[in-house]
Image (cartoon, rainbow, N blue to C red):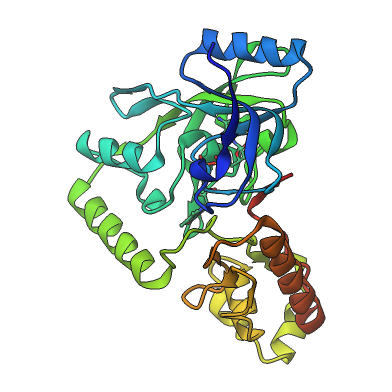
Length: 307
Ligand SMILES: Cc1cc2nc3c(=O)[nH]c(=O)nc-3n(C[C@H](O)[C@H](O)[C@H](O)COP(=O)(O)OP(=O)(O)OC[C@H]3O[C@@H](n4cnc5c(N)ncnc54)[C@H](O)[C@@H]3O)c2cc1C
């Protein structure tokens, strides 16, 4: 058990915003994790889990209690199944799977972060997400006991899983099922997706998309059409991209302090110039208020805000 004090979190976060963790530990095996969790419980320290840090906005005041960086990096292939630790980067899993002639993870091309973070948020693109490949998940429950569930029990929906409901459960490992398939074609898809991202998404520090896309069922579609929004374009996925609404509202490029709505992709707030946590929060509120006023839609955050 190696618990450090006062570790600056922005170095671990893609947004490059965030103060110090009061206590910080990197753990890579179960025994070490359980010992560290027992310590936190005895010392009554609240717990925050950190995966790849690509979906988190952390306060400049930092995080009280213990921040645990999970580095479980095991990766075992057996036929078309993969047992993968929660700390394995999704990009690495994709590349290794292709080397094993397995396809099915192309949707993850360009999605940064770890397998654990991706399962918790059911990360995905183009209407395909982790729920399509995750068969089993092992996790620690709030009593520090190792449990296993089927993927079908994980309450997966759009950018959601049971791990957002049970905040004290920790994903340890997953069993993923892929398919033996046309790897040449899969590599081509991955290449095109990465190029598309390069062309359409910003390079500056960010936490990816700030808001979830808006489900058709949660909106008055006819009212939006009456406001000259081209909703038919989004019929296929039955979701209106938050980026589309923000762009239509004329907010691209708007900034507060060092935080700016990307000119390249309106659902990205970028850390353009040493943005503070507060500046990003103010910009998020501003966007929400504008979209509410213009379109009667309440945007909800995809980014995990940690204070
Ligand atoms: C440039 C960029 C592009 C992106 N594009 C996409 C995209 O196309 N699609 C998409 O879905 N997302 C996208 N994202 C968002 C992000 O990459 C995903 O949400 C990713 O899955 C987060 O994984 P992570 O390991 O970084 O999680 P973190 O940011 O470290 O954590 C996210 C949340 O999960 C919790 N968590 C992490 N690991 C565990 C665990 N093992 N057990 C329990 N809880 C855990 C954390 O406490 C936190 O609440 C993008 C982000 C960036 C910066």
